Length: 379
Image (cartoon, rainbow, N blue to C red; front, top):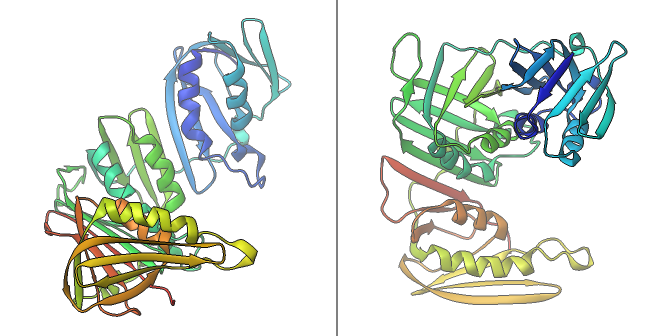
């Protein structure tokens, strides 16, 4: 095999693969990428860790066709230090790849293409398209609440439903819930022609890799296979095994009534909580994180936090209805919710120091809605 690449194009093709290749050392082939010629001027690059994967193609000059598996991390580091000129990758019969550009030359041991695991079938009968920027915004507003390595598989991913023209994305880690609803202009890919009615759970780690691909101004195509969700962005096809589990009934945890509601300037509260975070995150002398206290009283909100090494206090004006409320939170959880919210002001609703609060838009819109629920902590 002998192929000549443009350095920039090769680096761009390898970049999404780096988030896919396995680092568990359980199978050498899945630490690498499959490089395979596809005609005289095209090369396909694939990566697959048995849970998620990607496939893309790029233009190149194929001098001698062939294929091999190259360690993705090592190849990327080599390319970055080589001159900004064409890169030639040449593989001999002994399984050694010569990578050279100008007078710079590296050698890497490679594996035969046969060692690379077979990719799943990358097609589906159900799917839709929507603008990349729109999908990225919706997901970014709920991804902070996806659980990490929880024993309940379903909440380690984002639950996405499509009903007609409305998309709903939900995430929870047991201590908070993030929900985003939006009416979108979908391109319907259902072969049956029926109205979109889909629901699926995408693993959080895979969704993070998808977000890195959503940089263009075009559409993202999302298709659902029997076990996999497939995301197509330009020349890159990313796929992941979906979480095959029933999502929790999150709606039963959302309070329908509250004894207190307050309209708060979002940026002022974020600024105060960022200061409080400097104190609450302090673990001096092995002490656990301290909560941030919010005291809703009359027309003001007092924010305070105290740890073994110091304290912080601030006060901002609010518009409050109902009873006074003193409640404590994990400061970072509250900050995540407020940063993901939209609008100059938000409405915060609660009842007691033991019941969760809701963060919503001041004027709720059915076609474009967000809701964040955060559980309090004991003070």
